[in-house]
Image (cartoon, rainbow, N blue to C red; front, side, top):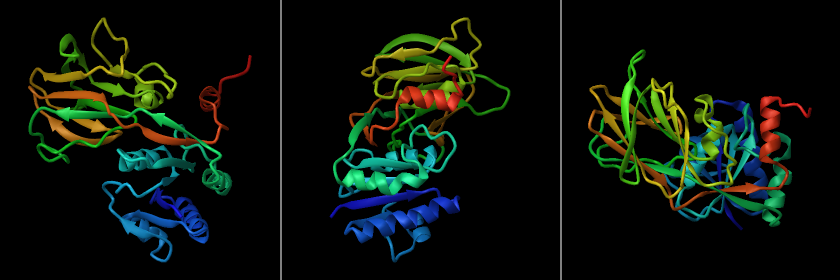
Length: 290
């Protein structure tokens, strides 16, 4: 018997319905099914037990995320630092992170418990702020890790900010821009891509530094060693906002410094060998075979 956590997109009835089917299927095979309290309320107390919505306690073997990439990001953040595996059932649009299609979840879970799968580690990143901040993160509290990216960007519409970048303790340059994105290879097809950042196979480890609308002759993205520590300093007199995987975590004032580094623990994505990253790109961008 295994403990399995189920995450669902609470705003999608099809995700909730699929979640109930998944929970019933797991229970019928003797597995203990849990979910964060909000999901547990949606799925029904007769199917799942409620657990902490903040962190995984380490007893969970598998996390099933039903929805889109946003649901998968939330599940990866929740399972961070544990050995829990992640399976995504795609009910969204892009589906870069969710491998299993809606009609194939039963086959996929059966294969997982038979050991017919591989685990693909996905690099995650963390952000550390040098001092007290305003916003959802209380002063001195650790920020949740990111699977896609850390973003430091302007707060005011129509006004750029000035950010200084140091790499491994050495000043590199400053940017006048709408913001800076520090992304993982997994995040290279998210916000960084829209800012003309490079696409990097998610099996690699690297930190991508991508400026957003820079007012500079040097406007290229950088692909850095995953062991690098990148420190972004808020210069000038305008504040900035810090977000991790699309969730705003802090408000930064001039003089604040944010250090971004790879985390020691990757996310553990389950792969069934039927998805190829290059084929996913072709499908998502409508690339021809000519």
